[in-house]
Length: 454
Image (cartoon, rainbow, N blue to C red; front, side, top):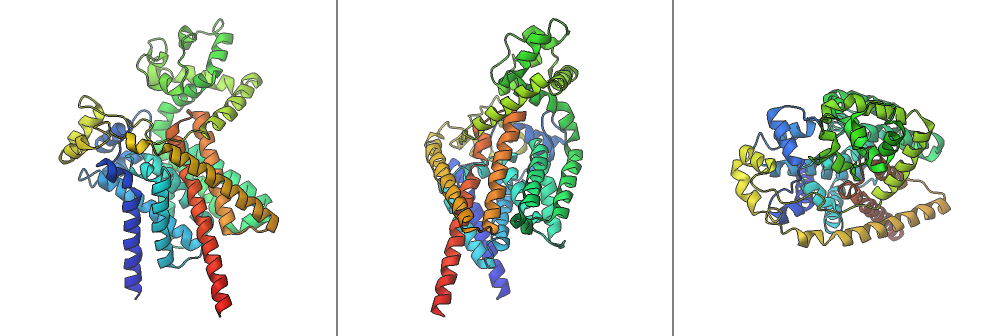
């Protein structure tokens, strides 16, 4: 009976995974982004890129079974996410194994139909590991004692943290904030093991070892890009260029308006002879950054820019951001052809490569409305719970997940730039919370009916 139950659970999780990558199935191939090229190259060459960690590249190679298929990459990472849904329902909603697996399948169906969830899972990008990191953290924080089965969760925490540079700041901000809330709100303490929380902070710093090279090479460029977009760089240069010999002074009157243009455009001042590119700009950019973070005038500008950029990010979410057509002359096309030659025909015939994603992108307005309605529903439930003076597992989940969405928006907007893609990879968590709330209400109603009948 137990074997049959485990087989049913596994089958339902596989079904959930297939549902959750429906965007890739409709597209005819995993959805690619320009950065996908760098991840493929880093995984197969085993060289750390200048602008990002190597871990996702290694995972891409490992999950694809060394070039067997890119379908396996999105399949395995999405299975991990579905498994975490299942574990959260076991631990926090107190469902049985079979009911948790059934609920996971239904939730994945709802999320795939009504949010950016499936698109996020279907992309060959490390974006999926941000929600994986969040759910892993939530599961670990609730552990009162160490269990052998938690070794896998700790390993997943380290791997997920190491897939993206932003995860270091995100982790520290989230863990410290959730710890402070639990310290002052007694009803939250039952869900937080402070020893585990300190352990996770330690593991976050340990993860820096896996991405130290990328951090050293790129953090000054990304933050300077944010400062250029926020107008802080221009203000500093206008005030100090008469006294300082800075390469960027030559271009202070024609700085790009957007961070991504400053970082990626070939004709950006970043790549000029005066500035020196990623490597040559490190000393100068570090000086400017330190100066603006130590002078009260510029500190106020940073705080103001951070607030407005975060609010901007909280309004941005759309699938399709950066998912263009990659012709034969692009590195992405050439690298798929080189490392996955047997899949190049499927790649060329995908909707994305034929420029026919418009029918899928039209769903953005639906996703945004569902997110807004879901947020109002959660706020209603929150204030109703305050009135009833209740704080249970579902309220803790809501607090933790909504906090993570806000912190992620703050990190991206403050230290890089606001982007539709960043919103799309996290805002579906609001609908996930609504699903958890509905499942809990259904379980409570069913329990009341059963007690009444007995």
